[in-house]
Image 1: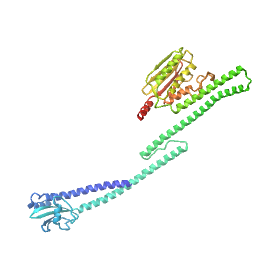
Image 2: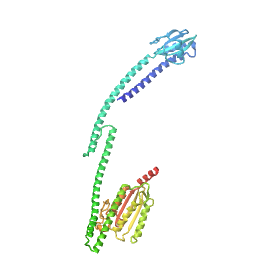
Image 3: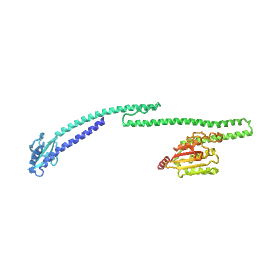
Length: 450
């Protein structure tokens, strides 16, 4: 309300000032017109001035001031001078319209009319002052009315906004207490409140998504702990059993040797399991290393070449696009490719062919590793930890059940995906898709910082 009142008052005062200036300019123009009519001939200045006053009906007072401050009035206005002008007033008003202290409420101008005499023309400014006062009163009244109207409108809008705000606050409180959430209340208020409601919708959606994700993560973690406990319990039970047998001292040399070998095998499996779990933790915690740029193309080519040399009985086809790089460590990429080749060795016939393709696209890299083995019963699903896709394989053949899960974790840690699909060779195809735009942006930002 105060701001509306001030603005209205300022606009009104500006209008009053402009009106006052125009009124004073009219008075100045009439006085100048009267005086200018006789400037070229002082002897006819008085008669010319009287002629202009009569012709244009100017309401002015005309006094002739003689030497010695004697004054003769030749024309009287409706508002006459209250005091006679002096030679000092004449001197102050020659050449321009002015106001003098001893003639308050008048604008005057003077000119020489010959013989040592001067003509003083005066016009009253009381009408302008009275008009300005009246306009000022109207402006103040209008400002008050406008402010009151604004206050009423603001009160209506504020009450509506407050009702909407109360509904939004109640909804936010329900969200904070974990109550069942319905739709976000619609806002009937200002644009800011509507934007607040929209932001609240986004926040609630993100919160629900996060809660659901946390719940899924908690369930997955619980499943992971249960599976890990089960996987570790089995070898520990075997180790404990054979340790008890050896401690009894009643076994033969052959049984003793078999027990020691079994304990060693189970210890190796537990070591592999713990190593895989630690690797997964490292990948999840910090998969990217901005200061370490890894040439993925070179690692894949080298790993495929070593696989072909170690397995000359297999037909290995390799197609690798150069220039695929990631901000990570060689260990992570080695483990990704190594797990894929290890699975091929374990689960396919010795002579099954293998095809490796690394393709670079503008925004992503695609790594496809295919084999000619027996394939899988189900494709496309993300492998879970400890899930064995070869159901006929027992734990006795080795492996922790984390190989496929580790590869999926590596791909997802870069914002990518791993999917299983039928191979063009008749077996299993592992497709890894990793975005490159995120990597490029991170490298550029890190380079600018350094």
